[in-house]
Image 1: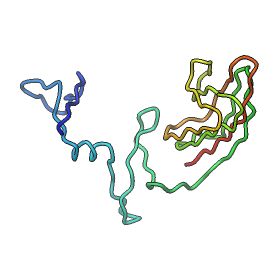
Image 2: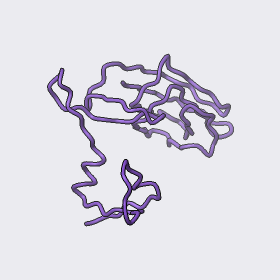
Image 3: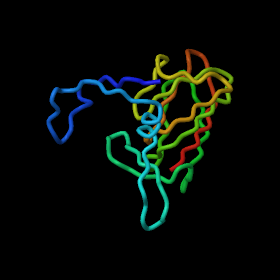
Image 4: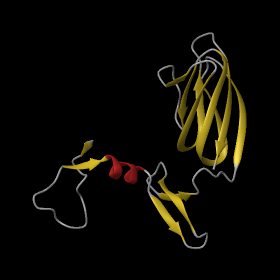
Amino acid sequence: MVQKIQKPDYSRREFQLTPFIDFEEVDDRNLKAISHLLGWNDSKKKWIMVRVDSEGKLMTTAPGIATKHVIKKISATDTEGSTGLTEPYNTHVIYNDGPNDVYVEFDTTATTDSFKIPAKASLSLDLEFQVLHYICASGETATLYWLALK
């Protein structure tokens, strides 16, 4: 199945395109290649995943291999709180042990309109951030477990 990527700045390249292209057709094989870019590491003699951090800087990590981790146990209440790490981590698992829903944000203030993690559910994400913000609905509490990997 062919998909179209439509974005006004998609065709900004080092050279002039005539006529200017504001969309390109991408088949499933190309889409998979675009979303899983790898770079060859000469010193380790293996392919590594090429990624971009939250500021758009190129970074590399070995696929699926963490070299550092931090685990935090957090008590969330109806007052917005935050827990920070000493440095940014790029892979996270946040488990809500309950008994109520909790709302989270990353490096910014959480409200009850933020991302909801239901009781006894977890959130896994690859996003570089350093501070987890959380809040419960009025009168409610929850216990969070935060696993951060890099």
